[in-house]
Length: 110
Image (cartoon, rainbow, N blue to C red):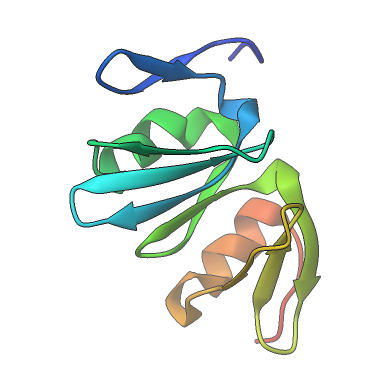
């Protein structure tokens, strides 16, 4: 997919996937955290956005969190914590460690 392709996120809002650092689920709403520091709440479930962002190197690290692999700053293999460029840290769910290894090709503790 093209780096300037915009995806619909809800209502009339569209975003370029490379501008999104991570997304957080909140019931049937999703909070988008953007590269420019802004946040947007949209009335679209994370599951729907995850399927739209699948071709753009996003990974679901937890049931309520989707991250853009391009914006990972650091990975701590001892506690499976991922730090993003905006300094947010997320713990990788235990059942997602193996799929993360395959997707990101980075080895965490087994």
